[in-house]
Structure formats: C-alpha cells, structure tokens
Image (cartoon, rainbow, N blue to C red; front, top):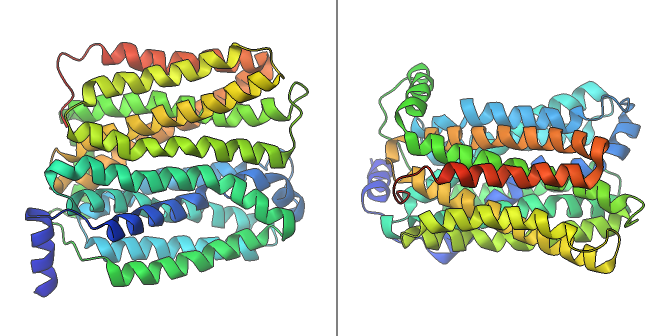
Length: 405
C-alpha cells in the first residue's frame, strides 16, 4: 500500500526532481546507451579473434541494432503496464548478462547472440526517460527530460573513443567485462534510489501492443515529430558513419586515436539536451525546431568551405560535428517533450514508437551514407545528409500553428 501511495503522489503531484536524482538518471542513460556502441570501433579485432569473415563482421553492429529496435516496440511499452523500477532493473539485468556473454564468447554464434541481447537490454534507457517525465512537474518536464537525455547523448558519443582507448592497452574482452561491472554497481544504486511508479493502465500485454497502432493513427503530433527526428537522426548516422572513412583516408590521414579525439569533440553537442528542454518549457518549440533543422543543414554545408585535407577543413569538420549533434539532440528533446504532454498513461508506448521510428531512419542513413561515400565520396554523402534536414524543414512548414509542448 505504501508503494502504491508513493506512486500516485509522483504521478499526480510531482515535485521538481533533485539534482542528485537528475544526475543519477542521466548517468544511467549514458552508461546503458554506451553498450550499443562499444563494439563499433572494435569490429576489426573482434572479427579476427572470433574468426568472423569480413562479410559477416557487420553483423556485430547490425544484430545489436535489431535487438534495440525490437526492444523499443515490444519491451518499452511495458512501462505503461508494470511497475517501472522493477522493469528498469529487470531489463538492465538482461543487458548485463548479455554484456558478460559478449566478453566470454570465443566463437561467432555466442557473440552474435550476445550482441542481439545487448541491444534488447539497452532499451532500459527508454523506460527511464518517460519515468523521469513522470517524476517532473509539468512546468519543468522539458528541462527534466533534456537533462536526462544529455546523459544519453554523452554516453553515445563517448562510447566509441572509450572502447578504443581500453582496447589500446587491454584485450577487447575487457571492454565488456568493465561495462558489466559498471552496470552491476549502477543497478544496485538504482534499486536503492528510485521511487516506485505503478501505472494505472488496465490493458493486457496484447491490448497494449494493439493500442500502439491506434496511437499512430490518432496522434498527429507523434507522427510529425517521429518523421522530423527520423530525418535528423538519419543525417546524424550518415555523418558518423562516413566521417571516420573521410578522416582515415588519404586527404586527412588521421590515425584511429586521432579519429577517437574527433568523436570526443563531437560530444560537446550533448549540451543541447537541457537547452532544448528549457526552450520547450518556455513555449519556444516552434522556432527551436526549425533552428535545429537549419543547424544540421549548415553543418554539412560548412564542410565544403575549405580545401579537403587542410587544417582549416579539419577544424570546420570538427565544428560541423558539434553543430550537427547540437541540432539533432535539440530536436530529439523537443519531440519527446511534445509527446510526453499527451498523457501519462501513454508515455512509454509513445516513446517506444517515437524512438523506433527515428531509429529506423538512423539505420537507413547509415546504410545509404556508406554506399554513397563508396560511390561518390564525401561530396555525395554530404549532399544527401544536407537533403535530410532540408526535407524535415520543408515538412515543418506545413504546420499551421505552434507545436504543442
């Protein structure tokens, strides 16, 4: 009875989250999200160690993405059905076991199975984000979501350089063992610190999944915001798929360590998350959305100002990375703020649909970016990257009024 009362209090009359709780949730999102990206710069040594063929090496990343996408659709909506703290810890437990499995794997099949379940377990992030929205009062909900999402973006951007750095001195297996140890400590802290939240949905799991289709049909702001971010995240994925190829090529000739530093610089764009949340809380989502889209378009344009391979070109490419991350992160938080005001009972399902849609856009951007770079170099890839936020901007002009939230 006590836990139910606590849950009702959080849902109906939330107080502003403490700085400590905000930091904890942001750190949790970042540390969990990093598991999606640790393997990306290690594909070479992992494939060689496991005996994976070059053609099958891409499965290391692909299966993690597939697991994450399925988790968004089939696990994240459970946040509207089951007590949130237990659900977060259970999904984290699945992810931790998968990370350990990846570390001990010595043949391809066990590692690839672990990669799939790492993606599935990492969707705990997207249960934490609406949980944070439930805990925040309406007037500060965007700020709370933005602060938590800043941790997520930092985790995404730091994962690659961190795993590269560890693998410089230790076997690649240690990346996964260290991550598993961190996740265990994090789970203990969350179990002690998180208040319970029991959703009031009276649906079965089947009814919950069926309702997601109705939400897509009956929620225009969800469709619009999902398409905006699908274009933006496709541009993001294209940029971070192709720029390492550009930087390691003959024009720049950077080492893997130097490319890791470039990725580290791009993480500065994560400061956009709390800024985007505050803009939404002040009712400025409408102009901020368009500014975010324009920022991403400019990021691709400025990479062509200086001769390729020059120090100025490298500086502009670094600035473009920061500007692009800033725009994509801002739009992400603005979108989440807009859908989270639609109703507490739908938040997990709305978030799952929103994230799954733009995650699919990211997969398309990554795949097309690699192909375009192979066929036409940075010019072809960057022009497609420019077209993506431009399309989102044109679509945004069809809105007749300010974006809600």
